[in-house]
Length: 373
Image (cartoon, rainbow, N blue to C red; front, side):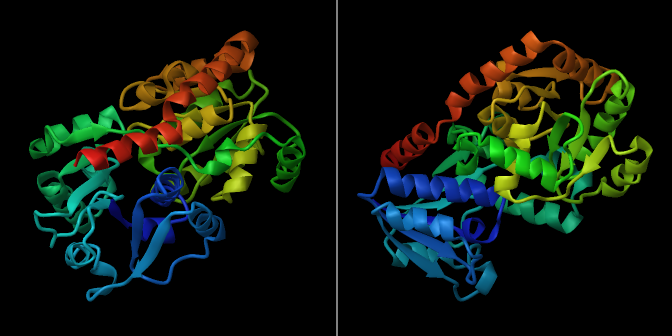
């Protein structure tokens, strides 16, 4: 087969959708070097030596396709024609869209849709962004030959908001960045704790952007309730969002027990997970919830939320609380902190649950879908 990928995110996004794209592309080339690949990009990619090395060492034939007549908009208005000119068997849009100029024919269109949170929480998005996201998702829902949803939650949302997608959705989970598969290095953990000056006390780690939907407000309220009854500090990792000012203004009130590190490099993040006592991820709603799987990959117990996709992803590796009730979050934090046997059972469960997201299995499932098309 000749397979083309919308690789814009792979070459330009250092986290999130970029990680999904890089992990899938490199895994596909490694497991199926017999196929031919075209990686379509809008030009001027980031420096990604590890990703390029993965592609090169795969042994597969691949080419980098840059730009198009419409510049950065070519992935929407141009890559459909390019797919036909390149005689691709499969065109896979890895981040919620396929080209508007795609046509039925030899090239089959696949799209991965990660979430439709802009429908669930429209207030979190600018009106113009909501309009574009809706147009792209609706078009992909109507025109793609196959839709890959990253969770049953996303599939259910698609069927609710875009009923035209029904009958063409396949749920295929995702894996985390390969760095989370490396063995724990005690000396690296110690180094990172000194780097961020979190050596005095154990800590709970929460990884997510400071957005209202991520629910840091109720997490911080819960931590305030248990501040004097558990030994752990609370460490937040993630960029600024629409809740940043509210959360960061409270740091001084906790006299060093509440910390915000901002965004950190992937290797540092892995070591921060390894150094944590346990993790908290009380988001209100997600399409998947990558920090859940990151926690499980590193063998950490989790406090998370009821509803949405959280129990689907973390399974028996977490304790769950109503994300809108700080008292419930606090109670689960205290349980993990104080009950060593419970904590150990959750950590072991995470290592077992994470096997459901084995990259080799996921890549093979997607490749089988390509063949079926």
